[in-house]
Length: 215
Image (tube, rainbow, N blue to C red; front, side, top):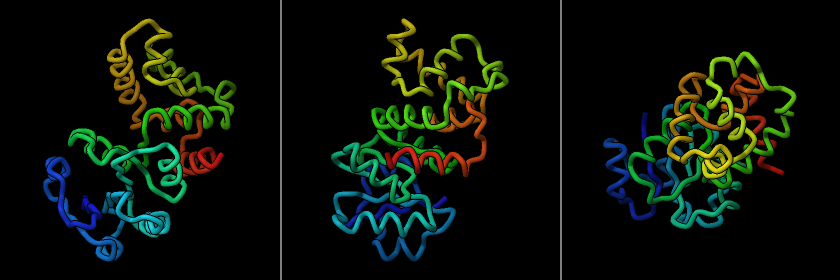
C-alpha cells in the first residue's frame, strides 16, 4: 500500500514516518496523478482552505482518503465524510493510531472522532430499525457480556457510557470490543451495526453511512 501525505511544506512528521516507513510527502498534483485503489492519501486539512472539499471529492474517486487536522471539529469531520473521505483524525495522532486508522479504512471501515461516531452509530441504528432487525444468529457467537456491549455500542453509546451502564472499566469495554470484532470478522463499529442487522454487503454499509451522516 502507498501512503501519500499531502502537505505544503513537503515534510513528513516523525510520527507519520514511524507509522509508515515508505510514506511520502507529495503535492496536490502528485497525489492526483498517483491516486489509485492501492493508495491511501492523507490530506492535512488546514493547508488547503476552500479547495479542501473539492480536493477530497476528486481524490476519493480513485483512492482512499483520510483528512488530518491540527484542530479536529465534528462539523469538519462530517463534511469530509460527505465528500468521500473514509477517515478524519488528529494530525498528531500517535503512530500506532495511524496504523489502526489505515487498517480500518482500507477494509471499507470509517474512522472519525469517538463523539461523532457515537452520533453516526445512533442515527444509523435507528435508520436500519436495529431493534427490529437484530440477527439472533450473530448474537449467538458472543458471550452474554459481549452481547450487552455490542448492542449498547451499536445503539450509539460511547465506551465511557457502556462502562458506566455495565459497571465495568473502559479498558474492559475495549477488550470486549476487540473480541467481538474478531468473532464477527469486522473492523469497526459501523460494520458491527451492519452485521447485527443483517445488512451485510459493504456497499450497503457505505450507502447507509452516506445517508445517515447527511442528516
